[in-house]
Image 1 (cartoon, rainbow, N blue to C red):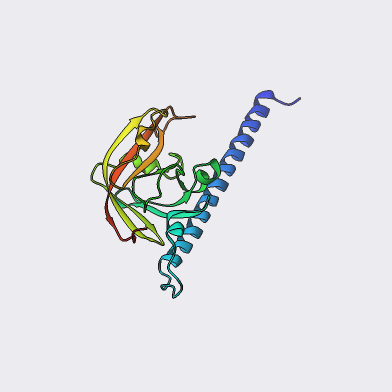
Image 2 (cartoon, rainbow, N blue to C red):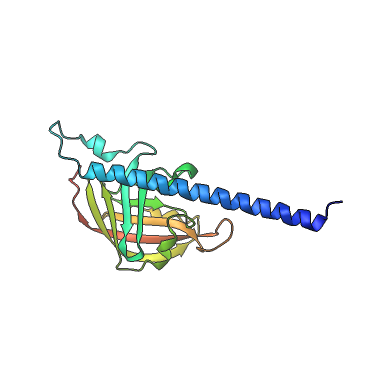
Length: 200
């Protein structure tokens, strides 16, 4: 007769191993995707100028769903991550996502990026006013300075309100180490201070 306690222990060990395996698989997929996209972006950024006709304003002003926006970097907290267009689950599992209802970073207004606290955006907990944020794309580099961080309810959409000056808002769940669906949102707001992107 099987010892029920031993059987239960074996079941829990098997489940734990399966969960750890699944987490490792997802982490490796994220890392591989990020490295692939970073290399592709680097090639695009350093490609020689095209002799063809210049891109139209429409090309510059739009990015296809699931397309790469660029690379977000916050040197102070050693954060470097690829940003893609979209905020669906599939996108946020492998990258940080640009909220489609907000302007693209090289446009005027308040551009918003969202990311999971359990994948890429946990370092936001160590971001402070005055820290520098960079967004690098094939169109050029945008530099921002953090104005403030704050904690809001998920229903508070005022953080996405449009601004007279170009700005960047980063959104993730809060508390950072909460188990389950976190009840609040952590917001980083930054103002653009420099741009090498040609105007649309």
